[in-house]
Amino acid sequence: MTLAGLTPRKLALAGFLVCAGLIAFALYLQYYVNLEPCPLCMLQRICFTALGAVFLLAFLHGPGRRGAQIYGGIAFLIAATGLVLATRHVWLQWFPPDVSACTADLFFQLRRFPILSVFEKALRATGDCAKVDWRFLYLSIAEWSWVWFVLFACFTIYIVRQAGQRRLSMWH
Image (cartoon, rainbow, N blue to C red; front, side, top):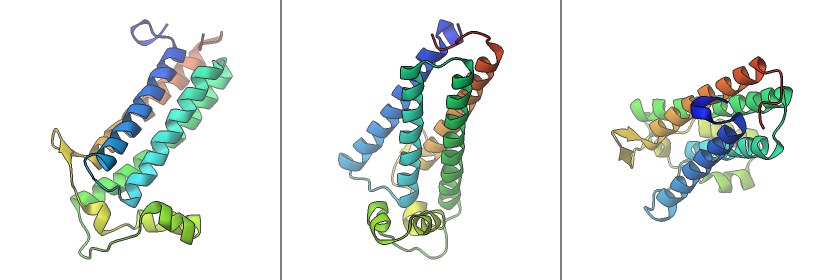
């Protein structure tokens, strides 16, 4: 047993549900509050979706110790990638560039340009990514994403450490 008597398998399910909730909330903000996501927002959504998929696979698979370490390692890499993207996004909001430029949405760019070029443009994003349209408890969406990626990174480290300390299957 682990945190509050929950097995790591149940924690993986909880991780999936949190990711699904974050994506659902992002879609709510986009389609009901009419906040258009910038390219960095879309890349962070991809990270939350991939993270949720890893947690769901871990829950469904219920691997042993080594498998749990692999799932946790993959989840950590995704969370770290999201953290880098969120850090860049927060930086742009705190220190907006002098020049504001509108960019096409992420899906349009992916259809028109090579994928590496799209990621490079998103990381060098200017105007749209620096704009803060919404806050909750004084934090912007980018800052909340940063907080969630930090929590997920810590969560995955915990899972990997737990897997390393157990000799038997930890996911059952």
